[in-house]
Image (cartoon, rainbow, N blue to C red; front, top):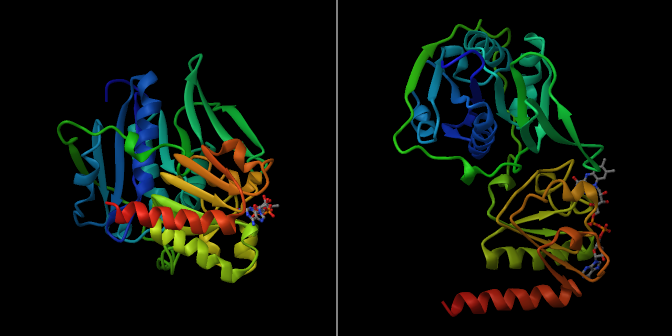
Length: 333
Ligand SMILES: Cc1cc2nc3c(=O)[nH]c(=O)nc-3n(C[C@H](O)[C@H](O)[C@H](O)COP(=O)(O)OP(=O)(O)OC[C@H]3O[C@@H](n4cnc5c(N)ncnc54)[C@H](O)[C@@H]3O)c2cc1C
């Protein structure tokens, strides 16, 4: 290490032999944070005793190194083994900050890790910066009504988790030559209990956080059967169907299709909000989308304040016309 606290660690997340997409977002955040500190970013991969190939995938990013920390107890995620292994690594490396994606898994073990190390976890962050030499972070509060800027107090390391979609995975800088990989055995104690089945965010359906195009329905759709219109538009565009909370509360779509503060946080390339008013609890779940198109008959609907393109009109007229236009465009090559 170049000097004390000149390291930023970013913890990779994986399941079923694949890195999560949010890992690249966390790497992008770590790279951004490390720049003003001139700190070296190292990715940490926790895996079972066998080499999984994931370290090589991480090495594609512009990193000072990839630390593959191995132990049979890490083959399956458990909060105890992850906490102990990371405590060992963080104690040894003395980084300035440890970054995670704000996933269910992170929420499960990272507060415990931070507490063990007499720190707090600053979670669900939407921005990170160094201001007057002080680490300053932003996070939503009160269901997204406020964005709070917080100065992270105390000694390093800072434990930080970044909101899904707040940092773009495609902004994670790639390396010209693969980053060096160091394998290291860690010694977490055997977990007290056998690992439970991994938490399933969306068991039977898609992970909306991965979708490039989302067509989302709100109460303007009026009846469950009218969702066929949304499905047809999503099919035409090659996208996924999502919804505001009242649609899922009514059982018209499964809960894992809900976008918002009590649903999923998504950041697709294209988000179509159809008959959605734009309540703050919905906006916090989709405002990082790259292009937002709103279709709403009320020109005063708050969704238009964040929409890149707005159509003021009756969705039952606009959506069929849009489906035809998309099909015609595809047929035209
Ligand atoms: C603690 C808490 C957590 C919450 N979490 C979430 C969450 O995760 N996700 C979420 O979405 N909400 C959440 N909510 C609910 C949120 O406050 C709103 O009630 C909800 O988002 C509104 O959904 P909507 O926009 O579909 O419905 P509405 O607000 O009823 O809006 C319907 C819109 O459809 C338009 N419309 C009607 N007919 C047509 C038509 N024919 N053509 C075009 N437009 C039409 C209307 O003009 C209106 O703007 C939460 C609330 C609380 C209190």
